[in-house]
Length: 272
Image (tube, rainbow, N blue to C red; front, side):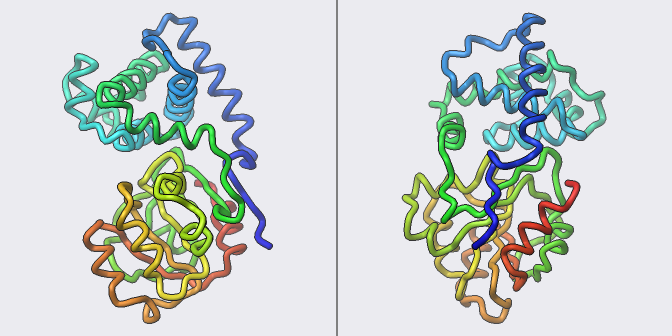
């Protein structure tokens, strides 16, 4: 039996939630123009985004993660805010002083408003995460990083070897998934829940035989992860189709023989 760690079991979430509420209350009391929170989903999502950006050790990187999660170009966000694209770039790169709560509130509102103008695709996606419990038979662990983590460092912690794809990139979280149960139990829309708050993450599929099934499942769904980790298998045992599938979707594939419990404990033990 694996120890289950979900978002709601994260010991840091209680403190984070309290801080987020305080920050968001400050936005409201300061009359920040977070336009018309028409739904509980929008309000909760704005609260989470604003809190994560403000509390992060790297606010610019957290801002960049959320902008990219909503698939919004820097120029479009800048236009919505009435600033030059270089302002957004400077915030994200750290060249400009970290934005205060008022600016963060305006940026978050602009991101959500742009998504609403486009039908609210990503708000709807994140709503499923906000209001859904994860089946412990499918998701063993899911964790988000406020700041980017180098994929090479991540791979080192779980003893993973590269099969294909670049290693000079970063991730913002990971999900440990029971490969067979995910494929058997989840619909295509439910499968998207494994991405948590960002697709810029590593999906760790456990107890795979050749790796073909999870890669095919990813291939036919709209969202793609930055990295897939095949647990319980050596690179030479991977199905020959995998590198080609991964290259089409620009996914780095790693393999590890570390047991699931050790993977979870090792990743949770890191100070990322």
